[in-house]
Length: 197
Image 1 (cartoon, rainbow, N blue to C red):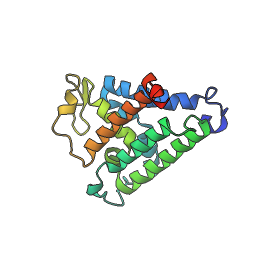
Image 2 (cartoon, rainbow, N blue to C red):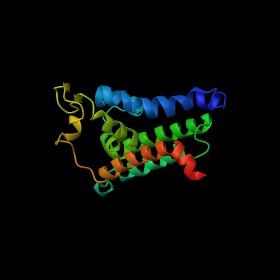
Image 3 (cartoon, rainbow, N blue to C red):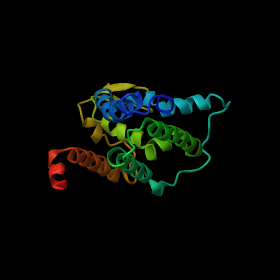
Image 4 (cartoon, rainbow, N blue to C red):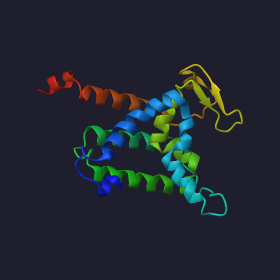
């Protein structure tokens, strides 16, 4: 609402700062500190859980997600998102950012109805996958399916836990994470500016 109705000057509107600084840079740091427990506060999951309250029975996925797709859709979406951030000239316009957020919320929740909440979180929602990798570096390990709750482990040990499901395309997703951050850093450096000249 702020992006659609507020001033369209990026310096006078909250949405560019909230999305590109608080969300995209700040949230990974919070996940590194507090772990994947923060997934409980996901705005996408919160909206989906609110939608399911209107149904008398739990929603059953309408379709089975093709296992061969793995998390390749999330990899493609992550690369597209980083292209918008680094290259697309209108990435800071509040109305444009708000439109992307609204489209993403509708798309994610529609896909959760089609394929199920866990499936979308693990295969398509690149934000959830991106943040979960940072959450695995936290000293807090959250047992989603077990009653133990939160356990304390050594930092970065969560990346080595073997009971995590193997999903096709996970390595490509991690490579996309690293390469986009590397390009973003190089793109803003003096070396890049010198090379362009």
